Structures are given as structure tokens and as C-alpha cells.
Image (cartoon, rainbow, N blue to C red; front, side, top):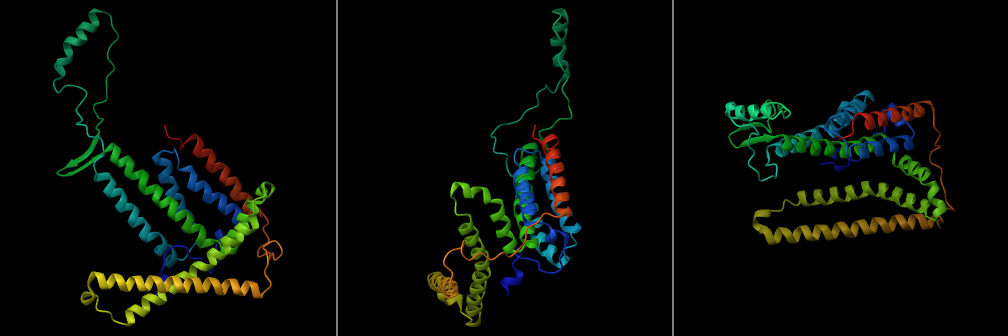
Length: 308
């Protein structure tokens, strides 16, 4: 088991370089925030459109199938299961729904004659095709509320997870921190330590593979010892895992200390005095095209995707 390669989230695809890789990280970050915020107070049609756009972007970027199948396959399965379970669950409203009109249509005849005699306005005809319960077969009951709720939860789950996954897949950690630092420059006027924050973010992103490597090594060490978990029982198994967790914490603290020592040996004192420009952030023609497309995106969201 190789967690560094098999983990489906948070991986950066170095090769091949797609057109998503070539976009400015600031533009991609703004697109990411647009996906994460535009589904708020939106109708279900817009939320489904967001899911379709993410899939279209993935296919249009020509990301290898082995990558997006691993990234997207399990997430689509998870969201489908969430949608199915939410749709068949009770809607939470403990009300026995009854038809608004009586089963016998002749019962309305005296009322209509009275209305004609008193010159009152005629009753508005209601649509008989409307049904609150869309499907009811045995214990399975799907109502309009549960279907709407299932669509909301599943689409939001997919949008939040996969949009961030696609962003991390096509953006290097150094580009992410450089783009966030550039966008946070106005906060310097409020005396907010922008450089320190971005340095912490960079070290955190670099530390994630080390955490995965330590977890992987500990799991392999347990597997090679062929521990008989049935003989240990619940209490003995819990003690073993507590020892593993303690060892993991010790190894991570040791790695963090080694990283800090390496920075001190190289004369690092503060981020402002040891700035290393990893990327030259300049907006190019395709970046401006992405910004123009983002304007169209929000225009459609405001005029079409608004929840009524």
C-alpha cells in the first residue's frame, strides 16, 4: 500500500501540463471561490450545472483517465449514495398529507351554484397533476422535499470536494502560496503578517507528504509483524493502536524539529528577509479570457440560478 500514490485527494499532477496548469494561480483561486460560493441560495438546476461544469473542465483539460477516474469515481459513487439515501428517508415533517379537493367532484357543485348566485368570483382551478409524493412502493417513499434535499446535499458535497481537489491537482503548492500572498497584499495596510501566513501555509503543504509517509511506514511495520488481533482482544488491540499513535506523534515532532533546524542552519531569521520568488505572477491572454468567462459565469448565476 502506497498512500503517497493511492490517496485520491490532495495530489499534484506534474505531468502532463494541461491548460489548467498554465492558468495563473490567482485566477484559479478566484474560480475556486466562485464555485464554493455560487451554490449558496441557488436553485437545483444551477447546482447540477456546477457538477457538470467540473466534469467538463476535467475532460476538456485532457487530464489522464487514470487520474480523474481515481479522483472522481469514488466521489460520484459517494454522492449518488447520499442522494439515494436522502431521497428515501422521511422528510422530517410529521404530517399526513391529504388531497386539497374531495374525491367526489360533485361535492363542489353547490358551492359553485352559490358563487354564481352571489356574483362572487369563480374559484381558481387547481392542477390535478400535482403530487407531493412522487413515488411510493412499499416502504420506499420519495417526496418532493426529500428529492430536493437529496439533490442539494449530493451536489454541494461533490462541488466542495472536487473543486478543491481539481485546484490542488493542477496547481503546485508554491503557486498556491504565491497566489494567496499576492491576493492578500492589501491586508498589509492593516498590519497583518501576510508573509508569515503564506510561509506557514507553504510549510504545511510540504509537511503533508511527510505525515503520509510516517503513517505508511507504521502501517507496514504492523503488517510485517503479523499480529493476531483475535488473541489480543479489544483491550489489547486498543493498546497497540495507542502505541502506534504515540510513535506517530513522536516521529512527526522529530520531522518538524529537523525542518526547523535546517532553516536555522541556513541562516533563516524572518520571512521578510529571506524571500525566494518561486513564480513570476503575470496575467497572460488566457488568464484574461478566464476572467471574462468568470464574469459571464456570475451573470448567469445572478439572472438564472437564483433560488425563487
